[in-house]
Length: 138
Ligand code: RTP
Ligand code: MG
Image (cartoon, rainbow, N blue to C red):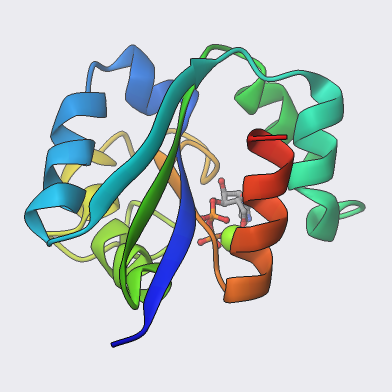
């Protein structure tokens, strides 16, 4: 067994659309354990740390603005290979092409919206997970 932790965010679109419970239920149904949960109005400083790797990209500023537009749910999930497993549950970055059965594929149907409005974030490696958990649960 390879028990990992991952940081999951339900982004402002997921919270505003009342999808938080459904999203958390999908993650739990897969067998992952909810270790921490809170609702936060993120500060710009915190988001700048979280999205450090994207500084300078064309979508960076709109992404930070979007993440400031409303509260987010911040969670830590634990389980066997949860980092890759959650990203598989989430689906590909762009909801318009994410597979049916995934969170983004099933709920990210507002195709007129920007790619950043893709409902969730999940850490992409053990190192990112520890870094991101340190930022959101300082
Ligand atoms: P995430 O970090 O949110 O779990 O998503 P990801 O790994 O699939 O995507 P990543 O490349 O890390 O990008 C972070 C977030 O930036 C927004 N984005 N917009 N071309 C675009 O407009 C674009 N590309 C990325 C998305 O919100 C993505 O989740
Ligand atoms: Mg990412």
